[in-house]
Each structure stands twice: as C-alpha cells, then as structure tokens.
Amino acid sequence: MKKLLGFLFSVLSLLALCCGFACAPSSGYNGAELISVSGTTIVIRATETSGTLYDALEAFDEADLIDIDGEEGQYGYFIEEINGYKPVNNELFALYTTLGEYKGVTYSDASWGTYEYEGRTLASAANGVSGTPLVEGELYIIALSSY
Image 1: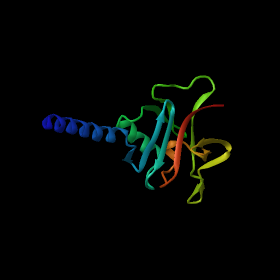
Image 2: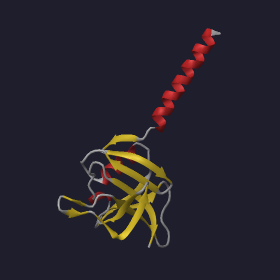
Image 3: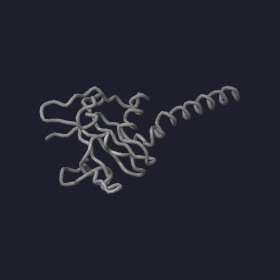
Image 4: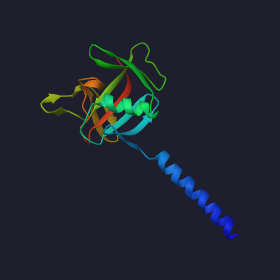
C-alpha cells in the first residue's frame, strides 16, 4: 500500500509541476510577457525596456504561443491575421497601449479610441507594432476592431 501511495504521490506531483509550467504566464520573450490570448485579442506586458512590440510578437509566434501573419509595408509591419482569423469588411486589428509619451514621442491618443482592460484604459496607438517600443510595465493590446 505504501508503494502505491508513493507512486500516486509521484505521479500527482509530476502532473502538478507540468500544469504549473503550462498554466504560468510566459515571460522572457524579448522583454515581454504574454498575459492573455483570447481568440483575436492579445494582451502583453513589457517586462523590460528594449526592442519593439513587433520583436515580442515575433518571439511569441516562433514559440507557438500565438499565430500572427502580416507583412512589412510603408508604415511598418501590418498584422493581417491573428490565430487564423482575417478581418473582413470594416474590421481591422487595432493596437491599444498604456504607453503615452516616451522620450518626447507620443505613442497613443485616447481621442482615437480606447480599450478597457482590468480597470485600466488603454489608448489607441499612434504607431504600429514595429514602431511601438516596449517600455517596462506598460500594457499592449491588439484587438479586433471596427471602423
């Protein structure tokens, strides 16, 4: 009986350890933590000030944590698809952030639109993902929006 209980304890401990790794938020991807992915909405928190939001998205994509597709255009990287969904008609993937002004540059403006997340208001970004820097502590949300 002791051997059986020891074996069951070992199996349950291993399962708990595996679930802990699978359920824990991912971090360490180019200075960002993937907080949430829900369909066509991605929530990211910068864990350090370095690189751009695009760098983090690319790292999350390469790690198979999200699936994004797009192309580099005149104004930077344009997201065309998130997790298999392509916007239709008057839809687009919009970027919202808590990053306002940084080093004398304005990166968002609430007059262009806002997004509410866990009691915080994120403003519509002035730049795309490749032109938006990761700044420690700031939130970034990419969400399907309509115009």
